[in-house]
Image (cartoon, rainbow, N blue to C red; front, top):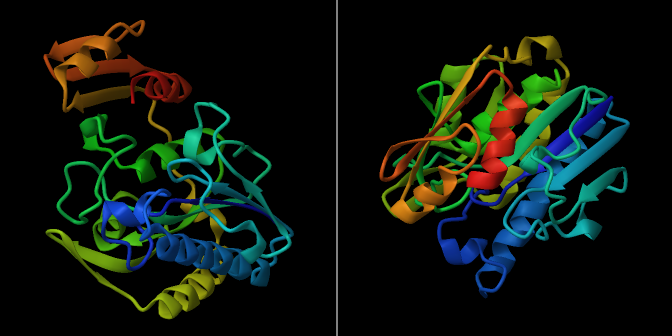
Length: 265
């Protein structure tokens, strides 16, 4: 079995402040260590379920967060960014049997996490076909594009609730919940133990149940904090400015949606 893991940091247990997500801040080291531990646990769970190859994408900020020496030897690690439109799941393709997302978080506009956002802080919300879009949703449709089942996601409770409503066969684990600027989190060791067990469980079932149908048409709406950013994004071929802060881009091709996001977010 060939298994892909994409990892972010805002949905890691205990991570509450933007300072904890910033490589240049002292508080970051603890979050980095826990992110690495949760990714390592996902790798171990996959190996227990029979995975023979594991590819990990470090998908937070610089892409240089995971401590490579602390994940299993069987895993390969993508650090930094190639610039490919697949972004947080770059190099995912039809050769993989399953995908997991570790440390993902609630979407921009959600009150379920103090760190809620979608892609960059420039966007106050993103919608795909009138569904508010999280980074999970962008990754989920990318998995659908290459026909890889998305089997497991860990992160905050708000995101897990969104996923359960979107596709009930995807296994989820809420390692924390958010209220205002606070979080209520599992103990770091408990989160690690549960991720390891839940990844094994997710990979031991019928993976085909986790395949996501790809819509025939995509209507992407982005609302920007700053009107000037919307103005610039409106110059992409096919983009339409709906108002001073909002841009619409439509396509039958999801790859074109991802290409636009590479330019616009």
